[in-house]
Length: 336
Image 1 (spheres, rainbow, N blue to C red):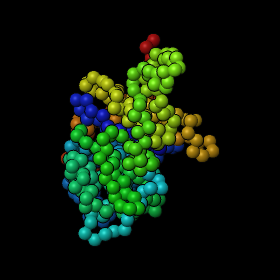
Image 2 (image 1 turned 90 degrees about the horizontal axis):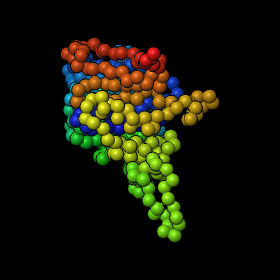
Image 3 (image 1 turned 60 degrees about the vertical axis):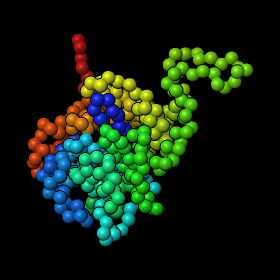
Image 4 (image 1 turned 90 degrees about the vertical axis):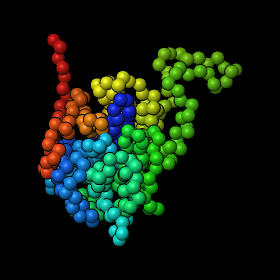
């Protein structure tokens, strides 16, 4: 159901996969500094940081799935069904609706939380301060978009946090791996990494028994035992291991390429994950944001060519949304 990750070379990169059985017309969307955000319980914000990310634009409002702002802070919302729980409005709190925090595929992936954080915060430290005053409420965007059950990854070049609003309150966890998937809750995901502490990128050695002549029988047996199924716990372990052992040069092309390879380790192919009769969850898109430069890169299931949108090539002092439809259809480079 989706995986988000961070990566750092010379610059800081932030992105995610969005795994679902169909898309809803999402576009790369730039919200300039003077676009007026009208928050349901917090009034209007006329001036703020510029934002770029993947969004469904509904009623001229950007319902972001994932995004970065011009200060280098990134945020993504991922499915958290069965554990997410939103509250009633509380006087004296910053009452933010889940769609103001960030939506999820029209009731599965988006919310107002992303604009609220990215419009005002330049770092994870500032985001934590906002979260300390925030009450995440279940107000819906409209009758067609129900409250999405989500949790969130927020990160800058220095640190990352996971935010989970559950029945017992709002939890903010330091995220030392800079990775997030779906259920179970984040502390359990981190605990389950204990099962893989023996993994190594090197060729394995016989630790089973000195009484048995066990030998490596092939090259390329590093990471033996790393899970390969599509469950969220397995994807968490796989991307955490892949990301923490990833090695690339510091150029933009090398860094972006490596980031797509990191998330490509959990790419979902049509036919492998059936969610209903004849319907299969696939990786609809994969994003990679250079949070330092404000560039949003993406690929789609039908188009593996990397496409880029640079927020700084637009008028960031404007007041109108700028959005680019996704380029679909495989782009094949012929050489003869």
